[in-house]
Structures are given as C-alpha cells and as structure tokens.
Amino acid sequence: MKYLSYLLSFLSLAASAQSSRVLFIGNSYTHYNDLPSMVSQMATPLGYTLTTDQSSPGGYFFQGHVSNTTTLTKISAGNWDYVVLQEQSQACSFPIAQVEANTFPYAAQLRDTILLYNPCAQVVFYNTWGRKNGDASNCANWPPVCTYEGMDDLLQERYRIMAQDLNGELTAVGPVWRSLRANYPQIELYQPDESHPSYAGSYAAACTFFTVFFRADPTTITFNGNLDATTADIIRQTTKSVVFDDLSNWYIGSYEPVADFTAVPNGNNEVLFTNLSQNADAYEWNFGDGSAISTEETPTHQYANAGAYTVTLTASLCGKVSQYELLIDVVTNVEDYALPQLFQVSPVPSDSAVQWNSPVSGLYNKIQVRDQQGKIVKVMNTTANRIEIADLNSGIYYLEWWSGKQYLGMARFMKQ
Image: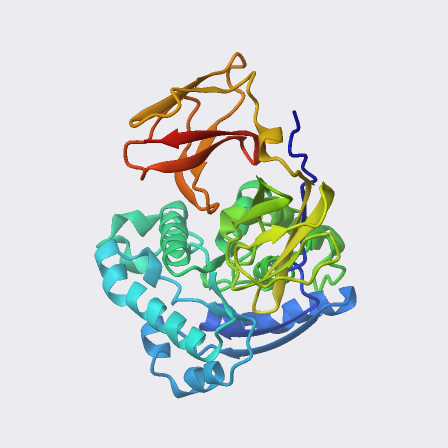
C-alpha cells in the first residue's frame, strides 16, 4: 500500500510589488495634506516607488466624477496599478435607498471605466470616517448619523458593500481612526471643522494606503512628517493591528492569483492533475521529470518511470504570479493506491449505490468519482460510507477518498 505524499509549499510571488502607479479619485479628504504625496514619502525610504496622480475637486461625488473630463482623462491614460475611489464624505451614510440610487450605480460605472482602460488595475475603496460629533446637518432628518459612531457604522457598511459587489479592496481608514479615537483620544485626527483630517488624520490614512499598496508592515515606516515620534509610532502600530494583521478582512490580495492543484495516479505511470487555482488566466506546469513545460489548464502527464517527483504549478494574472508545489508518488499500478483494508467497496457491480466499510472514523471528509478518462463526475463533501451512483452511465469508475487536500486512496467499481 502506498500513500500520496505532499510537500505543500505555497509561494506567493504576487504580494508586495516594489513599485506601484496609483490614481486617487475623490475630493478634499484626498487632497487635504496632500495624502498621495504623504504615502510616497513613506514608501521611498523603504525602497518602494510610488507614482501618483489625483482628481479630487472639493465636495465631489462619484456621480460628478463619471462625467468629469479631468477624471476621465486621467483614468484613460492607463497603466494604473491601483485606482482609489473616495465618495463625498456624507454620501455613504445617507438612507440606504438614497445610497442605492446615488452612490452604488456611479461606483460601478467608475469601476467599469477604470477596467476598460486599465484591465489589470485593482480598484480600492477609500473607507473614510464619521464626523467628530456626527453629521449635525442631517441629524434631524436621519437620526442614525447624529453621533460619530452611528455615522461611522454606516460608512463602513456601505464601503464594504461596494468592495464586495465590485471586487474592490478596502482601505480601512475609518476603522483605523475609530481604534485611535477609542484608545488614544489625545491624538487629534480632525481639523477644527470636525470633518476634514488633521495632519495626524492624513498620516493615519497614508499608513493605511501604504499597507494596501505594498502589502507591507506599516511599523517599518520611518517617515514621521511633522508628527512627534511617539504619535507617529502609535498610528503605525494601530494601522498594523487593524489592517496589516487582518488583510483578508479588507479583501486585500483577495483578487490576486492563488495557485493550487491536486494530483491522482491513473496507473501506467500516468497522473491526472486537477487545477484548483483562483484568479488566474495563465498556467505553467513543471512536472519535475525534465519534460517540457505544459501551459494546459488541467493536464494529464505520462511519466517515463515510477518514483517521486516534485510538481510545480505557476498561476499568473496581469504579471502577478503564485506557485504551488506538490511531491507525488508515481506508480505503475493504480491499485497500489487502493486501501482495501480501510475501504472495501460493495456491491460490485452495482446499479444504484456503493458502500464501504472503514474502521477509521473521521479519516476522510470528501469523496469523488472519476470516469476512465480521469474526469471528475461526482463530488461529495461527506464522512458517509455510501454514495448514490444511479445517475452515472454504465462503466468502470474510480472512487477516491480525501482528507482536505490529502489523497487517501482509490478503489475501482463498476456501474451496471
């Protein structure tokens, strides 16, 4: 009896590019304290290169940007790695019907325009903050915004909706501010108007953008600007805790390629590969035996000799790549992988169902069936010991047992 042994080595080469081109589309919350320049000043001493531009007229809404000549010209220039979208500061906190009519459609329109001219760009939503004491101008007609917390909750909710619906990443500046307000109230994040950011507020935003653009720990930043070292360090540590330590919560990197595959022996030194990669459109397979690289999405490979081979899949999208390695045992006889003492299939042949006995409870959590061509025709995420096969055509099939991504064994059965 043999088991397929694994060397699981996920190598993400996509994260943390050394240079990025970023277009900021927003309003005064973006151009106050020259936020894009501040991010560049953080990046440069650490060896990163950030090229930025912005279209940020005061008080602008998404609805205005979709027809703004300056905005559209900058988008159509192309070659942006990131395009940041920041809505007017109150708009996302309005009643949901209003947001659905006046914000979401224009966010989608901007996203579509961005991808038309920048198919490899990542859209980033700039999650801003609630006003210091709530939105007094709208409080009477919309009580949820009467407090900072109420307004901030709505902003976070609506920016998250846009990120989810439009495959965007979130720059969680609002949540970073909220943590700073709760834990370090001595740091003044607001201008006297209780809306726009102070230098410290923009510094917190810049730390957050640095983390998003470079996937880098903000505590490595050495640029303090005009802040004292203690305040700058508190802001960097807070950004690390809220953003860097929880990147997936903000969808950061969620749309980059992730290489993944499984391999199952088919006998006669042949192996069937199933590509499970995500967010990729090009593939390169190195089968570990010196043969030519394959660019098929899901190949079958014939080895000259049985033995152990390290297979590497490189998945890529827009110049970003991810690798996944798997150490496999290639066998001449597929029956070498069966586990008869664990999985005794009966009846054989059968016309409706097959079952098996396993003395090891909880050994597997997935069952799949392949036809003689190697195609997966049925998958069940289960620990049951029976599978219905009435829907299968007559013929020979292979029943496989898996524990997560670990292949446990195979048995052959016949469907009448």
